[in-house]
Image 1 (cartoon, rainbow, N blue to C red):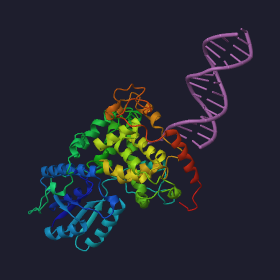
Image 2 (image 1 turned 180 degrees about the horizontal axis):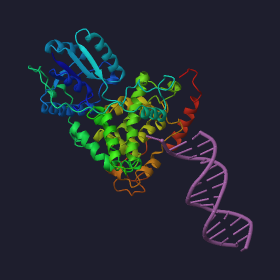
Image 3 (image 1 turned 60 degrees about the horizontal axis):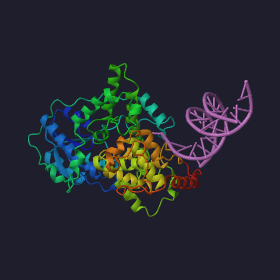
Length: 473
DNA sequence: TGAAATGTTGGGGCG
DNA sequence: ACGCCCCAACATTTC
C-alpha cells in the first residue's frame, strides 16, 4: 500500500492538496517529478523557466528530505513512466494536482482513464482559487470581461482555507531509483543562467518570505507604486506562483489576514489581491477558449495584415535595440533577469504589435521563452489584450507612446539608466527621447520606426477589420 | 491598464 | 476700464 504523488507545477509542501491527502491515508508516500516533453510546443517550458525549475526542484528535494521523504526524478512521457512506477513500487493510489493548459488537460484525462483500471487516481486543485468551470455567468457561459468575473469570484469566495504542510511524510521501505537532478539538463550549456538567477531566490520558503515582506511595505499605495518600473513596487511573486511554490489561495488568504490585522492598511493590498484575480481570469479564459493559445479570440483579427518580413525588426526588439529607451530598458531587463515590470511589458508589447505590426504570437513566444514566470494563460491574455484581439481587450486605437509612457512612469529615468548604460549620462529630461539623427551617440541605435507615422498606419489598418464579425462569438 | 486633436475657459499682458 | 490676444490648463471627442 503506497501513494504516488505526482508533482508538476505545485512544488511546495504547504497547501498542497495531493500531498496532503496522500499523507492522510497513512500509507507510505512517494513524491515523483517527471520531466515530460509534451508533444505540443505551447506546453513546453521556455529556457528561462527550465532554469527556474531546476532550482525549484532542488528546493523541493530539500524540503521533502526535511520531512523524511525523497523526491524521485524521472524523464520521459508520463504515460509511460507512471505505469512503470506503479508496477515498480506496488503503489495503489496516484494523486496529483491539476494543470489547466489544453495539452496537459488532455494528457491527464487520458491517463486518469487508463490508470483507473490499476489504481485509485485522484486529482485536486492547487493552482487556482476556484476551478475555471465553477464561476460562470447566470446563463452558464464563461465570462469575457474581467470586472464582472472578479465580482462573481469574490461573491463565490474561496471555498477552503489553505492546507497545512504535512508534519511528517511517511517514506516507503524501499525508495525507488531517481535520476540525478543534473541529468534532466534543465540548465543551459552556456551558463547564462548564473547572472539571471543572481536576481532571484527560489523555493517555497523564499516565496512565502517575499509575500510576507511585501504586504506591509508594498501594500502601501501599491496602486501607484506598481506602475513605476524603477521601484520595487510589485510583489514579484509571478515565478513562484507559476511553479506553485506558493498557491494563489495562500496569497489571498494571507493578504486578507493582513488586512484584518491592520485596519489602517490602505486599499493597496486589496488591489494586489485583484491582480491575483487577473491570473485567475486568464486561466478561466484559456480553459473555456483553448484555441486562443495560438489564435485570436476575436475572429476579425484572423484577417489582420501583419507585417510579412519582420525577422530583423523582431530581433532588434528582442535584443533591446529599438532606439526607444524605455523599450530597450524593458527588453534588456527581461533578457538579463528573466522578468520584466508589468507596465513595461505593456509598452513593449504595444510597440511590437501596433507600431512594428509583428504578430502578437511572436512576442508571446519570446516572452514564453525568456520569462521565468512564463504563465501560459497570463501571457496569452496579456498579448491578446495588447493586440486588441482578446477578452476585455484594449481597443484597437489604444497605442502606447513609448516616450510619454516613459516620462509618466519613469520620470527620473532611473529605470532606463539601470538597463541602458549607454544613456546614463543623459539628463532626466533627455533620457526618454530617441536619438536625434545628428546626435553623436554611435553606440545607441536610431529608432527602429517612426512612432507617429506607424501609429497612423496601424490605425488605418485596424479600421479595415473593424466591422463586426458575422460569426456569433 | 491611451494619445492626439479639438474645444473651452480664464488669467494676465498690453494697447 | 475694456477688448483683444495669447496660451496654459483642463475637458471633450476622435482615432
